[in-house]
Amino acid sequence: MKTFKKIFDQYIWEEEKASIYAKTSVDVERALGKCRSRVKRDLEDFKALISPAAEPYLEQMAQMSHVLTQKRFGKTIQMYIPMYLSNECNNICTYCGFSLDVDIPRKTLNDEEIMSEIRMLKAKGYDHILIVTGEHNKNVGIDYFEHALELIRPHFSHIAMEVQPLEQEEYERLIKAGVNTILLYQETYHKEDYKKHHPKGRKSNFDWRLESHDRIGKAGMYKMGLGILIGLEDWRVDSFFNALHLDYLEKTYWRANYSISFPRLRPCAGGVELKSVMTDKQLVQLICAYRLLNEEVELSLSTRESETFRDNVLKLGVTTMSAESKTDPGGYTLDQENLEQFEIDDARSTNEIAQVIRKQGYEPVFKNWDAVLQ
Image 1 (cartoon, rainbow, N blue to C red):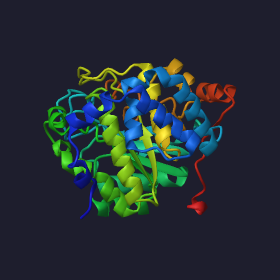
Image 2 (image 1 turned 135 degrees about the horizontal axis):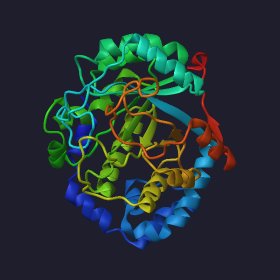
Image 3 (image 1 turned 90 degrees about the horizontal axis):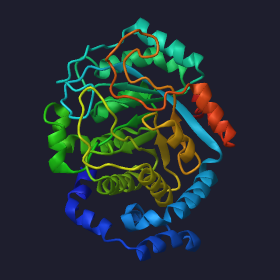
């Protein structure tokens, strides 16, 4: 069976790292010049655009990214909100507040609690929801998901999920239950160090996670989301492998849509020292590089980032933003403490963020589509 692993195994981390850091201003200018020649940029161009050599060209990249994004997506920002159903998890991850070895109260929402969260999110105007859980196959596995979706589906036009990797048959069941999108991050493509950050649980199986999008694609999911956890390894090299993964998926499962997220490590109950610190300017560089590589991909920015940063990059390539996020199960309606996965930075209300978007001449979009159009 063809999977991304066969492509991935042809690449060597250190060789790709050397290639990225060897890029020069000539390579950057060649990549930027392809806009005028209407030649499609490739992964070598992406390497140049994320390299240190591209940093002096950031303003030019931002202007080009703005034009390309507005051309494809218009002056709109898709709004979504996460709803955490459970923080139970069987994995040990060095960076996550839900990690099995972290001493926090564990909680999985029951029907009444799920409905309370739904009512609260609908009152805020949301029609696009992201369901999130820890990775606990027994307590929050496919049967729990299907039951929860029976409650959730009637109230939202777009349902995304960020849960543990599943079998193809299980993804097919989620599609039937109303799921439109699966977000699943490799965290890091550095295979050797991946094990250091995931020493216990099914998540410690690098290849199982790496091939998850193939199972999602074969199931026929409408949209797939990818990303790395920025800070675990060299962000430039990890981002190249993520772009390589995206390139493979688009060619293999061409009927699907795709999104890229940019989660930077945030403080959590587990805690981990950052190996690769990314500045705000470098995150702008990465966002713009993805847009210059791919005009169609959705780019998402969460409340992990600060108010100022999110306001300033709104026009530079981002198409999707969350607001007023709670990263603990029942966080919108239950009175509880120490259940969150990580700390958020932008704590403004949905209305406040919507006003900021409108002031910049953009329209916050809360409704994704009508079910009749699927």
